[in-house]
Image 1 (cartoon, helix red, strand yellow):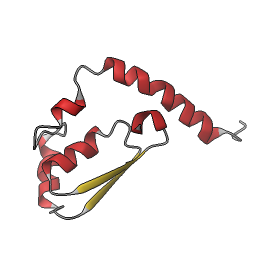
Image 2: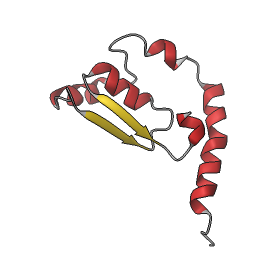
Image 3: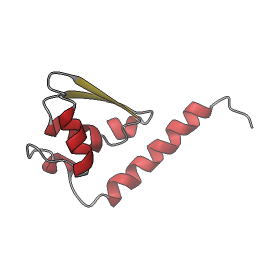
Length: 92
């Protein structure tokens, strides 16, 4: 298998998927995340995150896709966040 353009092909595929994700989403994240403490994370994970004392820390999420997990963490803790993804369509 030739892998010369593997990263570029991966980015192109995820960029193509981004529009499908947006179309299939039933809710507008910008509206949901305006509500303080709104989260899309399950209660078990939220409980663990709260025990970590993220106040004043910065959380990084690799392969963040549309960022809903990172937005949930930032919205429910006193942390800030930064997401990284190969798809410029997801993070745009």
